[in-house]
Length: 203
Ligand code: MHO
Image 1 (tube, rainbow, N blue to C red):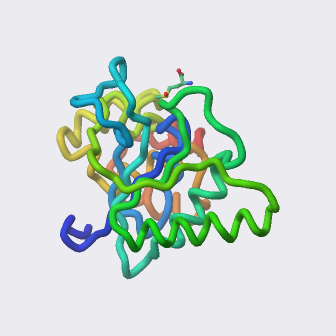
Image 2 (image 1 turned 120 degrees about the horizontal axis):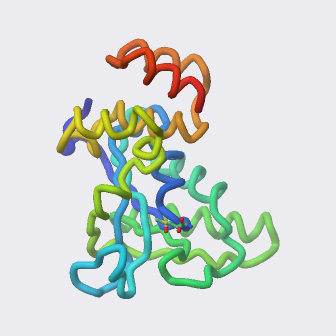
């Protein structure tokens, strides 16, 4: 997998972060995913003490395989951009890493407003700080898959969250990806027959 200095990052708030962690993790060209708190100013946010932050997914992607526009497409088609979330914890927001990302997000929003003929409520901002969420929120779909989640988390240890394979598995158990990619991935991972069948059952 690509080292972090050869990837680019993108950060999105789109409701509870468990879902987008899986959705992005399933995509070819996504190298790493993590969930966390961002978009506010409160120091050291945590799940039970979020302050003014929002749940976000942060992805690292391979710029030779994916463009920021591709990620924006996934973002805009998978959140409710026409209404405002009742809690700031779940607000929809693009947290741009730089001015280019911000400009791309604005272009997308403007085009969408024009096509839809209604205004977009999604916030577009620059990312200031990102605080990684607690381990039990990372790769939640996979972690909560019986037989597989705990064992893989133990096996990978500190490498669990940053593993590309784990990101894919997390996405696939949530129903993303196609059968051929699932099969190909499964062949390369060392799993017990019980784990295999449990994963298959959820695909
Ligand atoms: N509706 C979800 C929210 C969790 S998400 C990490 C739940 O409470 O089960 O905010």
